[in-house]
Image 1: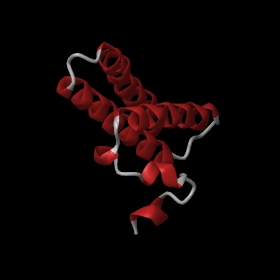
Image 2 (image 1 turned 90 degrees about the horizontal axis):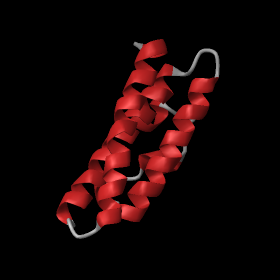
Image 3 (image 1 turned 30 degrees about the horizontal axis):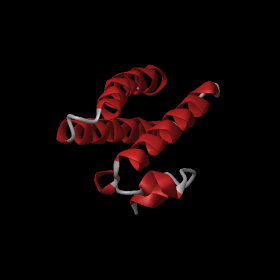
Length: 100
């Protein structure tokens, strides 16, 4: 059902964001951000796929920030949250252009 909607996406995009620890969420955010950039370089991106990537980036960004809030003494994690927040905004803006 949902998996067949975007068959070109790797299984790593199906991992449960809420179950991820901070290192896994950070790695997944980097991967999704890179995949979105690659997908947006083509003339007409696959809007279904880039919307999934956008949503994934935003979910991962939120997860990283929730983990940072739960561990205020971890300054590196707080810095990762500050990096993650604008990634969601950028992904939303990038996808909205060609895909509405």
